[in-house]
Length: 489
Image (tube, rainbow, N blue to C red; front, side):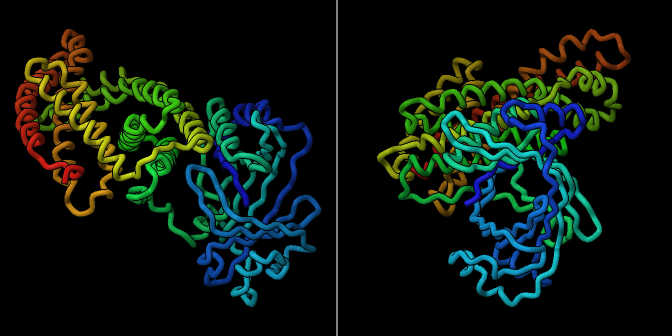
């Protein structure tokens, strides 16, 4: 069984490559790199690919090695799949060389296939073997080269951490330490998949799963360990997308996913009696809060673009000032990835436990959280400033409900989720009006042409709408109080 973490190098400049090659954790020697040239085979109609089998013959210096990989899983950059390697005389395809009974059985329907080369890889590899603090052995491979398919090429720039012996959590922990220091990010795409895409034999991107499948009678601890792992894998995927092509929309999606993970971590605290997950809750909270200013400026720019269009004003004066003042520093994506990999390793080493099944635990916990939510809502009339903490409670219960909604099939949870989403949106707009003052008040005295007027117009619009939004919030809150809860049905 192959278990490896694949890390893509996101900055291929010479200084960064030197930092990677000299990183003490990788223990790369000064020896010349291995020269590798691999041929991947399949039939013209892709029979092996459809069976989720990968067959290659690779020259490693003066030796040819045939490799068969069977369908496993790849998520969050961790690749886990059965693998067989056999020395062979040449690069001519021959499936009969795999004599292991399991491999031979998988290949039995394909022994008569007319195989052809579908892609090649040529790269140099620096290798080392390191011992993790828990005694696990990890084979490190630093690869640089290219994938070749149908006259096209794509670069290979990656670090692979393959578990030779021990616990797969060690690979994740080592990956976390490297991502903290270097421009690396987990990559769930193998060289084969990238080559197939380059050749036009697979679609651009695998569809993203929308939910982890839930089983009502599964142990609650086991279920939430898997839910949390699935959520962090999705965040790693979204982080890689955002890093590769930065946009306000991808950053917003990333923040939402981090918020959902934080809500789940908070919800299942009781499943973590030794509080082993608390450091990760705090680390994610810190990362999230460090991004708030960037999010605030993006919100103000969005509001101003909308309002300026309504008022038929040129948005440029205020737009330019806000864009210049917005934080320009990196979004600390490597730090986020490092937190996620360490959390994943912790869940591997210390799975959550509980006596109840998933449905009984979730419904009892949601009942408690709902009581706290209703109590916080009653305080709002006398303490308007309590809306911020109430908004956080609304977010937390809504994100957890979205994750757990399959426990109540049909429409049982849809009405409640819709109300919570509405309340969250209204509360968010009130929050935006509250925070706008600290950014816009200083600009109302700006001497640049149009800036003071536009800052005042935006601030006046947001503050004028705040009173209306508070009334609207109360109306929907009354509806929430009377809406049926699926866990009470």
